[in-house]
Length: 400
Image 1 (spheres, one colour):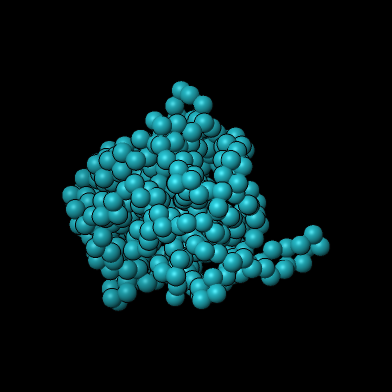
Image 2 (cartoon, rainbow, N blue to C red; image 1 turned 30 degrees about the vertical axis):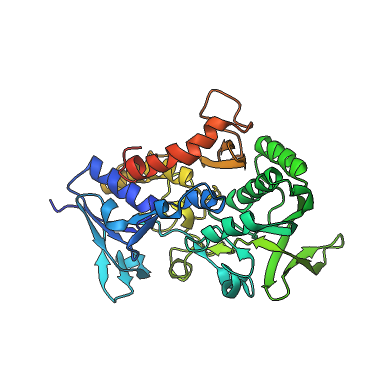
């Protein structure tokens, strides 16, 4: 009997975890990982880089060192999906067939959706922790800030690590407090969300931090442009009559998070959810199986499931995908179920962190035997030391 062919699109956290776990279950599988990048990044640490407590060089390693033994790595990018023919076409023009397809190329950062952002981010007092190259500049700005207006933004729609746009704001305020200048800082957050956090139990803690830091909140707004020369951010906000007003705010430093969506090659493919404005892959949110193509599964940041896009979510999704891919190939009923679990480790100040864990229903799902709505030093150590070690040594190898 011929070995089953599985193609995994994407060699990030999701792709490597699934590949490693599949091969642990069945070494005879023919697994191909299609991933164009030679480098692999541990992105959850970039907030800590921006806060000056983590070395950016410790967040990047060689992709080749984490390709599981027994898997084949094709250093190329998928251009087209042909699910009716069980094929993918790559940028180099090659065609690959599969028995099962796992789609997990991550999310696309749409820098160009905010006018002027791409040209100025990383200089002119405009930064973003969503880039390996730019995250260290965040610390430079925070460290050298002497007071004035600091603006932090969060776009409309889903982003990877939904807490990241405001995590860095809390750390910046704590640093400025320690420097004795917080009273000289006019701190604003422009957020496309309706509130600071979707889960009310954790939001209560963050609202207290916002109050203590004297942060001015602007919810339900859409940042549209940044004019670096005039140090101005433009945004849209609906007034009480439902009419959209164009507003502006001057800044002395800003941390801007770009809008995000599915990669274009997914948006323009049959796998995309036609009813999703961001073009995410259409799946059953419980089984992770594609809604229309039975031998296609997806996980991670590219899916339309209403879960937060975090590494913690991937860690729970991966074994479900593995279980259900193997069941599908064996013509068995899919029994793996994902309940929407996600986690956001949110530092509220240096040395203190709140670990927010929850599911699809935004119900807290706490792992530890204490109240996780409180910020703790132990959770800060988890974020700073334990999770990075687990990622490189266990998660990517399929053992955690």
